[in-house]
Every structure is written in structure tokens, then in C-alpha cells.
Amino acid sequence: MIAQWLNSLGCSAADPLGNVMPWFGQSMDAADGRLYLERTWYAPWRRELKLDWDVTRSESTIDAMVRMHERPSAATGGEPKVPPTWSILKNLITPHPLGGCNMGTTRSDGVVDHKGEVFGYPGLYVADGAIVPRAVGLNPSRTIAALAERIAALMVTST
Image (cartoon, rainbow, N blue to C red):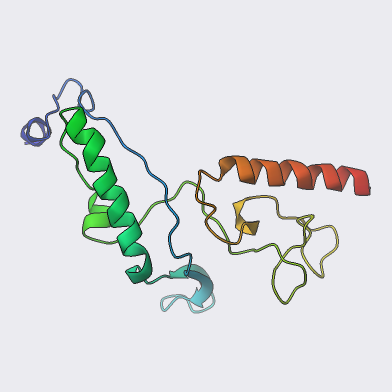
């Protein structure tokens, strides 16, 4: 049964990914999600991190990216397959989550300052994508790395 399914995708059982070429994309969504802690119904003493995000304002951007991937698929003789995580569930996966611990000038508009130090907690630093307040448009890994290196250098010089 699995072999039939693989064959329907143009793959062989010997090498199920032999004819698969993943296309990855990046875009700037509406950046209007909100992370929050919520108590669980089954263990009210525990809290879980939840995401409140309405896909409506970002859907056209993601759909445009999907349409853009159809072009290289057609050019290479491939057949684009949109993952059900998006086509059905309207859920995205990101390797570089951003925000949630935003950099700001004061505690009223951020969690950390320009040095990555948490407002009101001297010596506590955050140096990852959480301090980037919104999508930057390109792969943010270099931005995240640059911020982390800068924060590390500032920590060394301040001691």
C-alpha cells in the first residue's frame, strides 16, 4: 500500500525521495500573531504557550508564494504538492520564529533593550530571534546571528 502511494507521487520504494525537490520560500506575513500562556483544562496548575493568529491577513501572501513555486515546478517537469499543513489546516512551520520578547527602548514597548538585557532584570539576556519584533523579509538567520554576536560582545565589554 505504501509502495502504491509512493508510486502515485512519482517515487519508488527503494528511494522514496528520489524524485522529490523541495521548494522553500519566505515572505513577510502580517506579523499579527500573539503568544500567551494559558492554563490547561486537564492540569489547571500548568500553563502552555499558545498562539493566537488569524490567517486571514497573511493568506494572500502565502498563496502568492505557493503560486510562485508552481513556475519552477513546471519548468523542471515537476508537479507541485502543497503540504496539507497549509492547504487544509492553514498552519505554517517556521525554522526561525521571531518576536515574543521584543527589543524596545523601554519596558513599555519591549522586553529587552538594544543590548538584549531584560528590562528590570540586570544580567539576564536574550540573544535569539525572539527579540526581532517582526518579519524582516529575508531569511533572518544572519540578522539573528548578528544580534547574538553584538549582544555577546556588549556583554564582554560591560564586565
